[in-house]
Image (tube, rainbow, N blue to C red):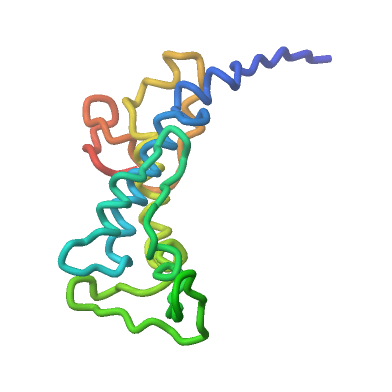
Length: 167
């Protein structure tokens, strides 16, 4: 008979080491990455008030972007508002100008994710797993949690020899 004792590392430590805790490094990076990318899908006039609201509304530690402003909601949903204050929503679609942002339109986040989801995921994978080759084993974790595929490297030439920038 063969008996094996398998000891797994403390998962809370792994989560913290990788920056995956709530409000951690990974969440903050994701919020900043989305805020930077979403501006291509936001309608813009000469003063770019919504872009400024996005920059001011970033709450990376809370994992969200809060865009404040009186016109933001109807611009996001793409419906014309009519009447006196308080205005009411109509069924008429807004015609966005694409002079400044050729991708401007409604539902910015949904359109961003449809178009750039794979690139955002890859950016986050690099951010989370892009540390030195020997980072995880030094902290008591197996290195095989990294994605295993042909050509995958950690991004640090000193250990793997394949060069930086690829995962």
